[in-house]
Amino acid sequence: MKRKNDSNPKQHNKEDLGFLDDRMQLLDTVRQMIDIEFERRGLNTEGNPHPENPPLENVWYAQPKSVQKLTNKMVVDRIVREASLSAGDVSNALISLGAIVRDALLMGASVELVVGNPKHRKQQGGGSGSQNGDGGGGDDGGL
Image (cartoon, rainbow, N blue to C red; front, side, top):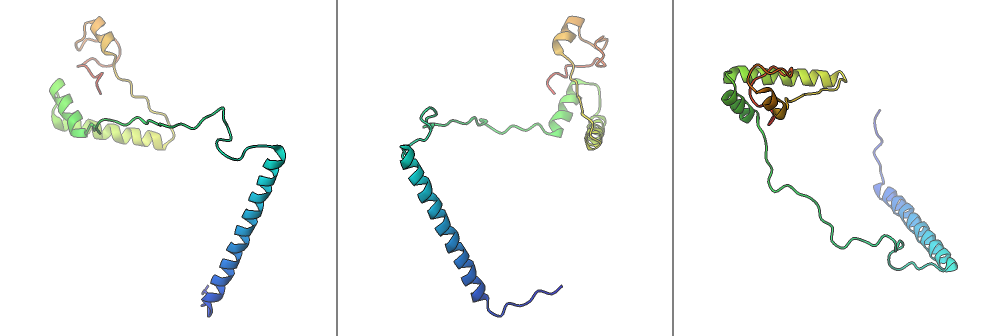
């Protein structure tokens, strides 16, 4: 469907400005009505309308001191350093883990990545013979 060319765009602008003026007059009228009602009720329109909740003078927000990022390479390097796996094996495992988590989330499933409890391992004696069901291995509490 073709759009008609407006032969007189100034006419539309005048109509739009007229509509805007009408709305501004209506807004002024509503403000006047509100002021009259406040005067009738003896309410103060100056200052804070809720004295029980004074405005905050100093607002503080928490900000990180620095932006720290844990990259895939950092994870791979740490796992290679702490386990007897090659960098390629670790990289492939992380790529597969990412794909599995993504697929599960797309299907609407929740994902629970349980990291072994380092305190529990120390009580068990650590090492690869861990009985806590996490497969043993090194300290993975930091990841």
